[in-house]
Length: 618
Image (cartoon, rainbow, N blue to C red; front, side, top):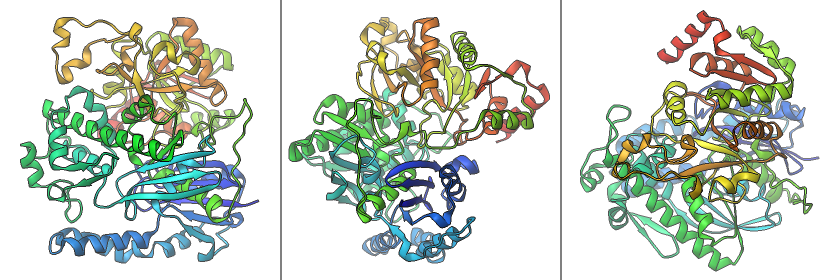
């Protein structure tokens, strides 16, 4: 037996993953345990969890695999400053002390941290493997996929040098074919507009994607004329005159402001305007153009019908949906933890297959799982007894029901337009809640989208919600008729489910579009009639499938609203206590944890008030 521990850390979204003889056993982000969103620290809690899940001690681990090569990153930093000198002195002065004190010695830091765990890591540097950042991404995309052979495309901000790579996966081999290097980066272009529109880089990009349908891509041509030159094969070159990320402390500069006629929006302080929506629509259109050109060129060049994707840009589910509909590749599989957290898993898989020569097994049986990710349910689970003990200690008041009664009462609450916290089974790995740690609602309700955004999630009102739909019914509600278990594909609501808009409604612009009910399922229908779809499968999440089936039996509607179980600025809940705190501090009506059902009206009013006050202060 060969045991590989994968780790990503020290930048953002630290995580740990455990692979035993090529099989993914467990994976989790450190933020879920520390409650610090995008926690970049050494993932002590995540490492302890994945080992505990496998019943192992650290001294039983054969190899530790890290998701990038720190010295190559340092080389890129130095070469960039030298290339742009004397510009960038402020940025250089900020970055260098951190690198010289900590990051340059990450290998030693990592080994020291590993030896602090119970049992301690028995190996030395000879048992520590370091994969290049994009190899980690590519491995996370190809090895868990259901394909024997595939083109593997990774797109992100930047790793060591690479910002976009193409590899060919074949059996247990993964061969890098071509790359685009820093400072030319599609991810950094998107992040630049994220910064310019007033959102936080490395976490606000999905907000820009959600904002885009409210605008028109008025500035796409200007972007392609001035910011990015795109070749027919999708390769590109960024004009560094408009950006400040190489040498400065911001993403864009005064010339960027001058080009678009406005200064960057100050975060959280200024109203979003039609201009910001049009900028979001424009960078989204440019991103889609690059990805579509790349896909068409790669399909033509390699003549392989399968595409795998990872890297932060692969979380752009709008572009992913267009890639699928374009049809250049017959099949597309996207790593659900496509960002840096997934690098921990990719590093472990790369070590097993590429360094150790481990065999890759893809089952050909008709009953085989659709991939090796186990639905991405790779985090902690809690027994019924643990749940009851923890909830009692937290001061919760609950009733314990049989599975059938629990499902029936939850389906009834949803049909009555109640907002429900749903905590079941293993926690998801990656940024999406997939029915393990979810907040659920009735998609037929015209007010559910606004209720969840403002009263539960405490976030921007424009943000859309996703539908979780029974796989067997997806084509009856949406244009999509394919698996989308990880909520990484956007497609249109079926024409027969749409509502005809009045002439006055069609003239609305921007946020004014928000309150128009556009379909039979308005809570999950975005302003362009699209939806970010999760297909729910009985084999990977039978309990969630039963719940939606019960809701369908009551209402005729084969889907529910699904959003992550957290509030703005907080990671997705991990433990029953996390779920109870979120339930008590928000306007959730019902909480279901295992077989425990909690009604808000029956909880201690003083406790509820204390939790509400805490969230308001935070």
